[in-house]
Image (cartoon, rainbow, N blue to C red; front, side, top):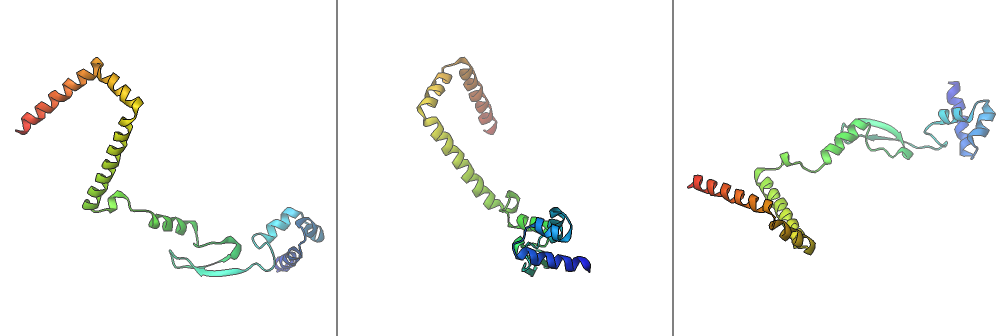
Length: 152
């Protein structure tokens, strides 16, 4: 009970623009202890609000200066997860097909633009003249011939 009276008096002093040092001298305690006692109040007319958490529907109180929306970090995390964009698993097969087609088109366009650059064209032509590339080409065509033969 004594602490409540002292706290109220400290808050009144704080509202009169007194520093924590001056308040501490008045009560015979340190300025750090004054800060601990006053805590989140800050000033005498700190407004307390009672609202309902949008996630768990529980009522909770907080100071206006805290600007809270959820009753706990747990509820805040749940709300963030609910508001995230859909992941691939949440889409239907048709939507997944459409999205993958869009992604592939973007990749193809990026590759096309990359290979149109003059410095890249020179490198590509120089590489195509090497023995390693010709060997790769032969192997690639042979694999495709085998695949086509199996299909027929």
